[in-house]
Image (cartoon, rainbow, N blue to C red):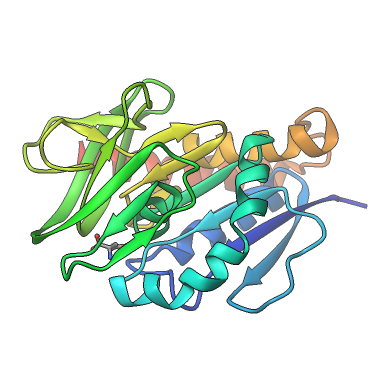
Length: 246
Ligand code: GLN
């Protein structure tokens, strides 16, 4: 029997824009192609928290979506903080990236406290940062995606960004050329697009970390030759997209 990996999709009803659900599909598919059995738990407000959690994926959302989930999010804050500190791999895009920080002050002046996993704070502005984006990450190489946010995020001293952007006026805040953040095994980023189909290195980091934490090693001995071939095809599609974007 294939070994299972439990993936939580965090607030997919309200925090899922610009293709972020593609991240869940990509993790599900790549896990299968590596010979594992993904179990995806859709977690929305008021749901029971799953007993087993190996990987968490969260998407972006409008300011209104962030306000809708916030009470439930606070209810789960201790749990999410301890899972993060314990090394659970997580990918948080845009709206949830902001809420994994210390606070988000929206453009209308509402302050939403974050859960403080990431040492960063976000302040809304009237100008939105919109467009395709390429960043360079020491860990993952070139990362390609699409950003669309009004919040400007500033990392606290010593917090590692996910990468750096060349373009002016883009990334975390349009000022310091940083994009995203890396803390424990948590990745926070503004990159939608979807991110993971185009950036297999990040998908594989999340998958390998999740599998290794649960089973001790990442082994692909259950993978069939057909699965290996399909994985290589998906990687080629991603490579083509990355060449076109760079
Ligand atoms: N509402 C947030 C902002 O505009 C996040 C948007 C998003 O998730 N794309 O800054």
